[in-house]
Amino acid sequence: MIVVLLVVLGIPTAVVCGSIFFAALSAPREQRNRMSLYPLVWGAVVATFGIAVMALTAWSTQADKHYDDFDSALTALAGIFGGALLIFGLGPFVPWLLEVVRRSAVFLPRALRPTVRHVCGAPARTAAGVATTMVAAAIATALMIIAPAMTAQGGADYYPDARPGALVVEGFGADQTATVRAAIQRELPGAPITEKSSDRGPGFLDVATDYSNWSDPYVGDQALLRYLTGNPSTPYDKGTAVVVATDNEETDSAEVRYSLSATGGSTAIKAIPVITVRPPDPRFGRLFVPREVVQDLGVQLQPDQFIIDPSHYRVSATEQERLDRRLGGIAVTYVERGYQAPPYWLYVVAVVILIALAGALVATRSAGSARILLRISGGSVAGLRFLAACRAAVGAACGTAIGATAGCVIGLFLVWPMTTSADWEPPPRAPFETPWPAIGVLIAGLPVLAAVIAALVSPTWLIRSARTSGRSPLASPEPQKVAPTSEL
Image 1 (tube, rainbow, N blue to C red):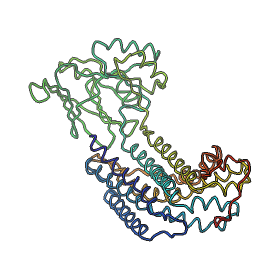
Image 2 (cartoon, helix red, strand yellow; image 1 turned 180 degrees about the horizontal axis):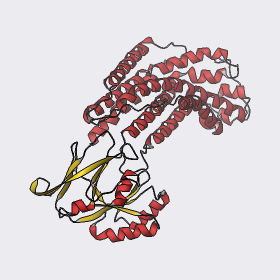
Image 3 (cartoon, rainbow, N blue to C red; image 1 turned 180 degrees about the vertical axis):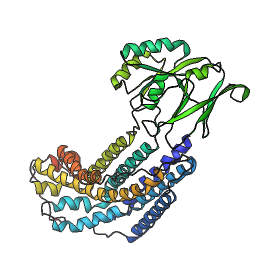
């Protein structure tokens, strides 16, 4: 398992980290040197191959059918690897974009040109930081597309264990039944308790109908039937079973069988009539068998679940917590609240956004000497903060522009392999909306947030001082005289 996890996470991580190295390696060492076309060509080839891999995985998983777990996992891994290749191939395009932005600096106000040229004119120093922002922005954007699609599909594939809002208490032994019931009555006074029973002996109880076998029927009384159907007018007959059907299944008879062994041995069989009703939840299908029918077979029944019917009482999260403390671990409580999407992807997006901001700040600090910025700002700390904020915003914008574009491509391709179903009768793909407004906020917000952080921290940390024989330029109260430079 550990080896598989290392392969699943290690290969894409290594490829993505290689993108940062590739970006720094392909950047020209000197400002006067132009970037070689070879890294761009190789990067374009690798990125195109990655897109082709993702397109193939999307095409192979576009049908709404059963997918084997192993094959589906391999396909998803291939898609992730293709996305990593796309990010890797875009590495050399980071210094290329920095060069394009540097040449366009002439259209900016004169006071801002040096800040842009410090970030974009020294790609050998700043490309790694900007590439880090690119990688993080790509991952965040892809997750923002994939996660809602997986959430929608997870809701479509979800089958509830109880009626929505119902409290189920289970997992207790026969000798703890009275204790559990007393705890429920104490914490939920006035709430009617419904019992589901099962045999506590060595035998095996199942019910066979025309369409299927039910190995865990709901055995109980009239209250349990009312809970399953959600309809108090459902007729109750001590000798008639009720199929709570989620489809068009219709049956009029069933065999209740109790075997002393699941693999053989003596079996008691009783044929009973069956009626079919529709459930309150279209995915909550069950089979109800009256307690008297099972007892007639000589089966000793004991409660194995206590249920609070949501039609009569809705249990809050606070009440469930109090009941858990009261039970002290002798039973398990569960409240059916529908499909709950795991929130882990939000934490991952938050972490990669922090990484993107860190990359922009690293590029800001690596941009170069502070002399020109000191002269422009006149030695003002506020001026230095403003120029540092401009540096950070430019670095974040360059990385986000490439990363968000790649993330959109990756996310739109990977939603197909990530939403496959292992069910033999899978539901159709659930519709979902791509969160374009949220992605737009990410693209626009990262540079702004990087600028705000750069404006708040100390300029001596973000603007690297030039090494001089005397004091640091940032420590001098007067701006130093510098020779004219082409950066202006």
